[in-house]
Image (cartoon, rainbow, N blue to C red; front, side, top):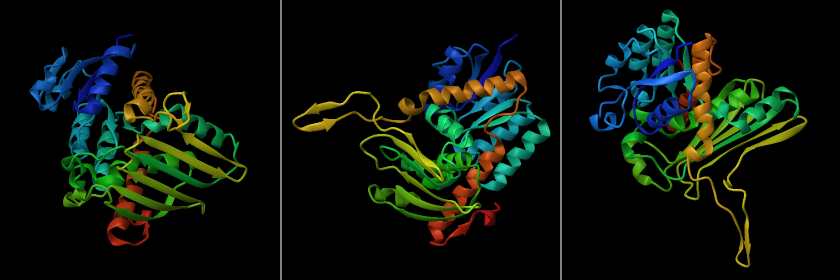
Length: 334
């Protein structure tokens, strides 16, 4: 069977990770083209290159694309890729609004192509094992869930601008909104957010914050909490906890290397430095799953509707951030 030709659109940090993985580690796929507006970045690749992504989409050797451009560009690129008949992997979030997301979904459905969204935590061994145990009834029925996402430093002010990334809650919290829906199998009914710029006050100049606490109420009556932060200077801290009627699960870890140093000064260990070290295998596993779906004609494990639901909850929490009010997720329509 011929290998699936993959084109990567956007060669920022994640685009390079995906391009290198496809080029060197996938048996069923090969990197055939890349696109980025910066010629100096394109010069690093020996495959077909183009500054204009539409050139890549017109390439008959490209069967599927990986879209890792800024969020505000996703709608245009995904719709164009769908119209070109390409299978699509798109990094989260789908877009900055539900309207744009719905337009993307409509284009994909009309073209009959596959669309998978980049929620890599679902492919992480710890999170997937927690999901398996929950589904098996090991802890009974989930009644409370907490999801923590802490980055060790802030992003650039240009990227933090909500018109580019959606802001802290949409950009970072989107993973947490997805994972709490996925683990509990329940929909979020309403949200309430408290936010602040406590360590990087300059974020307020672009309309963003560095810390957020979001309280959730699920349709079943269950409770939840999401914490997102850009001020964890000690390391990259991604964890979760699910409390059920018959037990609880703690997910994730902070200590990267299984070594404790014990001296008179105390006990210490290292920490996970950032996301490539914590979720590297999960990022690659989701691309491998995407290629399998393209090859076998299967629907993706993470659907556009999953992404839409997570975005809807994140937008609701962002509205709560600005209004100081509890926001019903169902009231967010665009």
